Image (cartoon, rainbow, N blue to C red):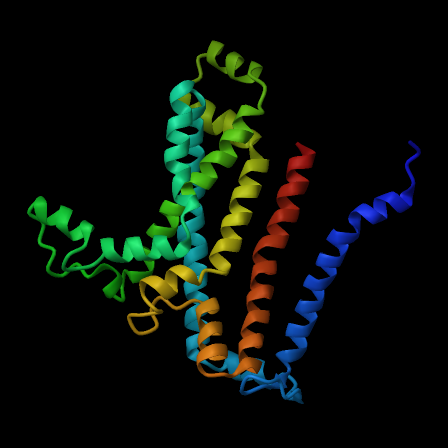
Length: 290
């Protein structure tokens, strides 16, 4: 069978159509963010950059952006680190590795609504599992409000996200580690290298592709975090757990200000691009050089 370029374009047509629709929606969103749109039906009344100027003047917007940054740092680093350590530990196992892998991966199969509901109940100050366990060890839980405490509520939510996504990091790193040649590990063991030195001196530098996939996907998750916020705290106490996607929902669907809502969504898109694209380019170039 003679291959023709037209066949390739034919096979790519569905993907190109879907990609075109995606970019068309982004352009539509950008145009809508430059209009005054209050209500269900679009008015297409030109407003220029008024929505963005009003948005940047809101202290609530900057608080939400700061919360997104907290998610990025406090969520990605521990999830990636523990995922790698567990993956390296499991890679030395044989049959039992499958069991542990499934245990850690199971939370990924749950929807965010189920996860949020589960952890909201666990954090309940009066009847939650966390305070019940602490009370069993005679810990004074009277002041432990968890997600009701504005000082620690966002970190309690990050723990829920960590619980759901650490299995993803484990599976990605397991695949990356299993693809490494065994000769380098055998040589390190013959030289007397300790397990920890092999882990961080040999294994980790050679699974950069796993780190790239893990951190990029976790960054995308944190930028668009909405479900856990909506289910666990509703943005409270006050606005101490609000993030940009939740603010977009409130402005667009509760206040019916779709012009401002699309402006927030555009900022989220730019924020995600600024976080992901430069790091991905740097990591890919570094990986290729090595």
